[in-house]
Image (cartoon, rainbow, N blue to C red):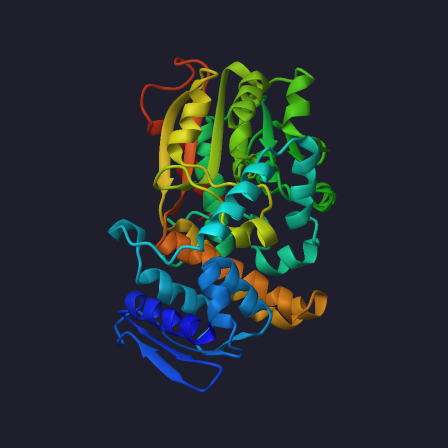
Length: 421
């Protein structure tokens, strides 16, 4: 059984890795090499410390590779986890129709059942799921994210030489420009994180901004950061579910939501847009920024469900727009960001590498390996898999926006000029 698993593992690696070099040392000392060195492709060597590693990976490649790496059973001896996952994924790019080895039928069924159950995402489970990821402590995110805005979402890289902080500020300006903001307006930030977007808007416009989140850790720091930025008199943060806010009957001139829709869950898409339409003024504008799939609808893999984002789901553009159409929100503008998140993730990964000792002391080495596996897998998904970002501008009234998109570029240039970028 074990030899069969090892042989099948080698066969699959031989089929997959053609460019770049992967060296595998099995538990019995046998050495297998796959692929040929190629420009731009990493060379990686791994050691399987026991004879069950190959079997565990074959049963569920994503979860199996993650857990054997986390447990120190899959040991990377040349390169790192970013290069290992990049090597595998780059040899099977989504555009070419390539597919990685799938989990076993039983594991696929088990994951689909678990995914379906979790994705219901009622208010109580939504708060629990958010806490799983965001309430692990602000210190980790301080070390990983940009110090300027603490943005835990895709940055925007119009120039190659930008720092992470500059790229995140460019993202904030890019989104603000699409909101067509005017002084005196009220703005709702759904899923406000640590307050970076709300604070940015209040700094650059004479607005009243309300940020909502389900994370107690986030809201405490968001309030502190607003005080430090001198905008606490115009920025309010509340620990509340978007559904409960909509039920109160509040209305806003503008709505922005960045990196929150991924936590909504597919069965709640229509609920989210119905709540958003109810919260948005009749002539209002909404900007939704979300990770998305380039292809059709799918499911969330077992590793992500178990360790990273329980209840989370990356939406396809088709199902996102379909849900919004049911409440007559007009998708006035749609932009796909293809590679911007990959650059962002590589910057976060580099920050984690610099702070490895502190992160391991704060948690433990297993957590560090889990976290870097997550960042590396996400990077590969944007560089070679089917992941991207969508920015969708919605309005309830076809007359609410100018006839052309020129105002976006003008507003963005003005904001960039204000910050000297």
